[in-house]
Image (cartoon, rainbow, N blue to C red; front, side, top):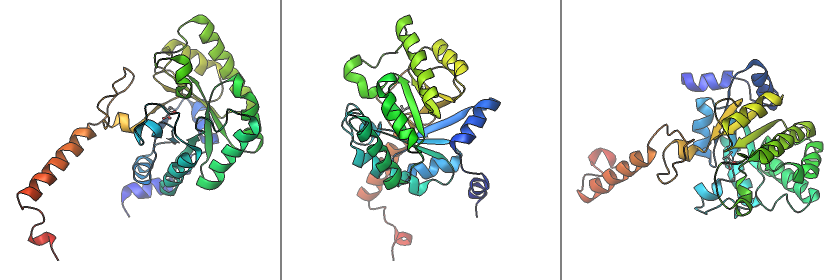
Length: 275
Ligand code: KIV
């Protein structure tokens, strides 16, 4: 057995309680997205604490312009693939657009389908007071809920753009109120997307539950990025908050070019690669 897999085996599973304890002792929480078995395995083996099966799969995997088209069935398919790979991380799944906005009964049914059919550990929902009843019912059924405030991509057609949210006092105050409300309802954590760092710091200091930021500065209790973006698989997406940890576009592009060249030049397969 490799040292790496032995390490992973020794570490206990990450739960919502583990994340709460991390906040309390000031240890930063790490979170990345995954939508398939292979990527989820690599990320889990590396020791990430939370894996988000984000509805960003709509953009990253399916090539849609927004997160709106992805369906509940598609999210369950992605989540099941991730769950089969993960041994340690907490797996959180986005409730997709349209699966929880109609009423709280439908929201509960959608959350139960995700938990039952994929084996995920928690769901994430975008919004504040407008989804209060749905959050309450899902929590009452024993399903942990992660909130999501600030830039909420499922409302992109209401916002009109992907610019930084809550720069004005009124929207900032409303965000703080909604964050407090989600905590009172019983959410185990909240994602804050693309808001001023000072506001994110204030929310993180006000709340007792973990606050995970994306484009929200360094003072949140943890950070999340879309894995395909931080690995440099997507050349077009270059927002200011994104740090690229690799240039996998070039790695893959060069490997494929080499493969094509080898075949054209009759170099692949060679004698050793034949039966
Ligand atoms: O869908 C997603 O990937 C997300 C993250 C950007 C937080 O919601």
